[in-house]
Length: 188
Image 1 (tube, rainbow, N blue to C red):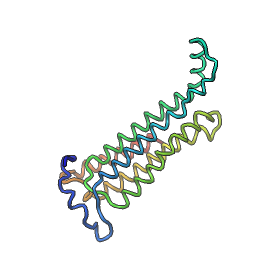
Image 2 (cartoon, one colour):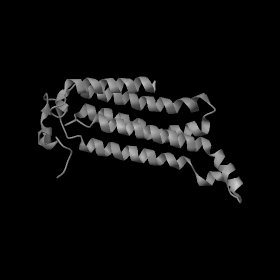
Image 3 (cartoon, rainbow, N blue to C red):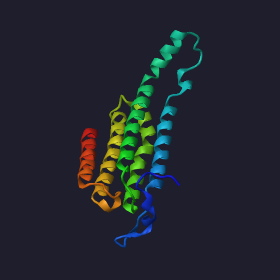
Image 4 (tube, rainbow, N blue to C red):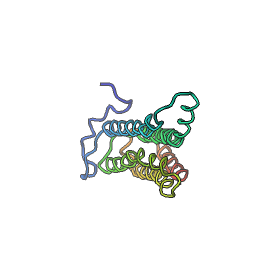
């Protein structure tokens, strides 16, 4: 079976970690995460509805005018899609050298994904109620929550070099922490 290079030793992943936890391959976590991100990104477009254009459009000018009225939804969709994409890329990079995960990593990832699945809702709120303070604040707060959980997961992982593939250096782990801290500062 083909897998990522360096994961040939996944058979070790059933041993206990300090007698507390069972370590497992990150493949299922990555597959679940990929699916959640894909569904959340797809759900974003549901806020952009053809029915919202109205009926009785007969000219190009009327269609362009109606599309212009959808610009908050279209802009919200585009921005949220791109941010979700960036968050997914960050997740993929974060797990690039991870050999095994424990229950804490799985739990942090699940809570992180809770923030991801809420993005279509907060995007819709922002598009519909952006004129209200709560409507404007919930979407960036949602993204900050996801980035905060990403940083927490990164700091937890990098404090446990035994979870990484052999050959990952201390410098690489420090760089991962700095990247997470930078993303957190940028999100704030």
